[in-house]
Image (cartoon, rainbow, N blue to C red; front, side):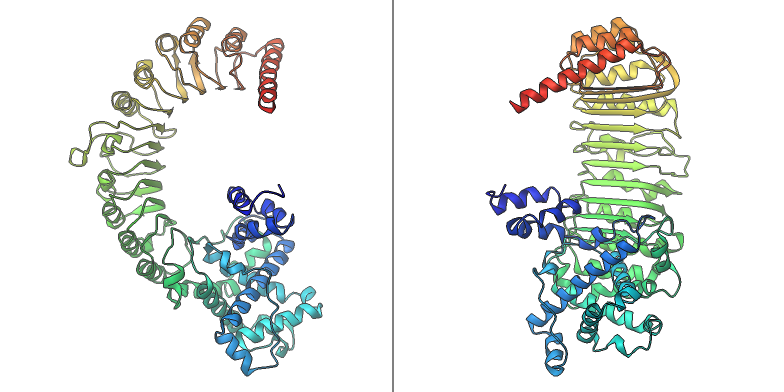
Length: 579
């Protein structure tokens, strides 16, 4: 490993850019590893420091780590500004008593590519708590560092306070520090790829972070200031190449949120991914929807859009997406409700979609859901999960194609809102229009095996099948006798499916599938003879076999044989790979 060139190390480390523990270990190996790993460790340092912020596991020990990170972060900002000869350098020349800040080992700020504004505010608040702690103030060297930072940033020493209590009660100080840090940060970041706002959740969270949610806390004062970051002079440079924007903000005022989105649409025009959580705030929905429409329309490269927890009372968002139909490839709606189908019917005009997902939406309408996957000739993935109502019909005005020639993944799960008529209609449509499926998943009221037979015969290249039947006991012997699935690798049967040994045997002989994984749950017919057939005809192929809540208990001998066969095959395969 010591002879690997830096380019190879950087390529390896790029696959671990979300693993802070590994990256931290890498920087301690040697200088070459450190140089190549540090840029990934500091790509999103605040997220790594506050990864436990929405859990009860965040403790005083984590606060100390966050405080030390913030101190390194701020010292690097100050040093860069001094070297550049900016305002801080000129101020230092006027005040020769202000000591120099020691230069950092790396320009850490130059590595930052992902920034969450809420994490930024929380980091500053945690740093303020850290430097005002009794333990910190008992260390004279740390106090000197704090005094240097204060002197350089705002020409003010905390020593003028008679006690830590006086320091903590000076609300204007933390606001001024926040503004100065944000100004320096935006001025020094050359290229930001990801920007988000993900606030602390009220519950669950640790006791020490819960104090930040209280009225009048330092953090609440900070959150009112950092949203103006978009208006700093250098923002049009650092944010001009923004690729991803994620919003999960429920505490901000509607007008300030609206203005932030409008300012962002003015600065950023190349965003490829937008993920937006409305948090069901009906009082803000119209103001935010109008601003979000402008942000969407201003993007020339928008490929992915996700909307969460939203009550659609207007057409703004979908009209904005309709104007981006030529570039939009992925659309995800999670818990998006609407009192009228007209507010979401423009989905059908997004003819370039490759992935469409809709989770747990309530349309509050007696009309049928006016959308079919045949609207999208480029669609690769189609997923519906607990959508109400469930009836699928075709809107002829938006019909681009009468088939979906390249659909590979079909997922239809209606665990709560199910209707046999709706399920039959959509599965039949899959059989008629989709011949290249690789993944088929269905958890709905299937009333006829002929529907599944239709799909499996037309899509003979299926690799994954997951079907759940919790309502009516169905016999699939006829299905097993006629289908040929030569590429099937994963099979999961949940619920009351009935099949005899002989049809199972004929299916395995005729298809000879590379079936490596089988999962059975709540099955009433599976016995030792079924398992014996699987072990015989899938020998050298089957690697995983899971059973849950079977009505008939498998014998100890058959379970032992299955374990031995699978372990023996895995051992031989590993040995061959090693050789």
